[in-house]
Length: 117
Ligand code: AMP
Image 1 (cartoon, rainbow, N blue to C red):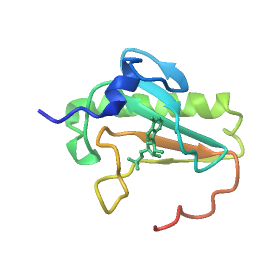
Image 2: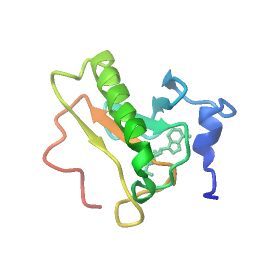
Image 3: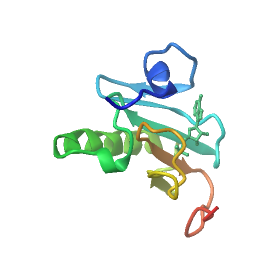
């Protein structure tokens, strides 16, 4: 069994977060160390440690992450100006929390790429 991270406690509201959205499948909350004026993490309620662990039966769930991202981008007023959706994978990808999450970043011009580190 993969090991739960503190994101489980955020989902369960056992630790505080600036939660913007939750349903039976997806939770979204503001990143604690924002890299842009809007920086939201969108995560499945189910633990999937990395992008490598996404199974065929998760396809609908992964689609829901993007649907929630789109809704939140509109809510944040950045849908038209634009935004970036990123999922980091493993060490070289810069992943720190092993419960997949989409970063929704926007609110300023982000350039072509986030820094390579
Ligand atoms: P990653 O590096 O892709 O795994 O992203 C992990 C993200 O989680 C980072 O952007 C952190 O700033 C963010 N983070 C860490 N702890 C918290 C927390 N308690 N609440 C919200 N975001 C967090």
